[in-house]
Length: 81
Image 1 (cartoon, rainbow, N blue to C red):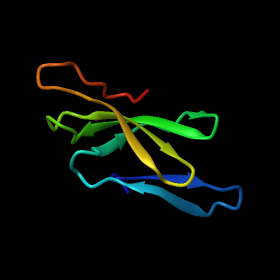
Image 2 (cartoon, helix red, strand yellow):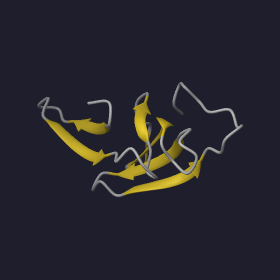
Image 3 (cartoon, rainbow, N blue to C red):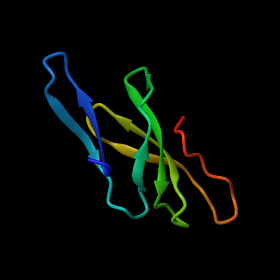
């Protein structure tokens, strides 16, 4: 489950919101997804343009968008947002 983010319902049913491709959209998502007006935000440890991680958002419908792709030489987060 390290390559996916899931939403757990009150009935403990899992609903996969996005499956990361280990490419431009990132891989190895970290921490939980803070929910801001129905959109979850997070980081990945690898993947992205330089394979050193991304900052992303994902909607409840599963639409994922990359907000930032870390570049080589930048410090990446290992704790999420």
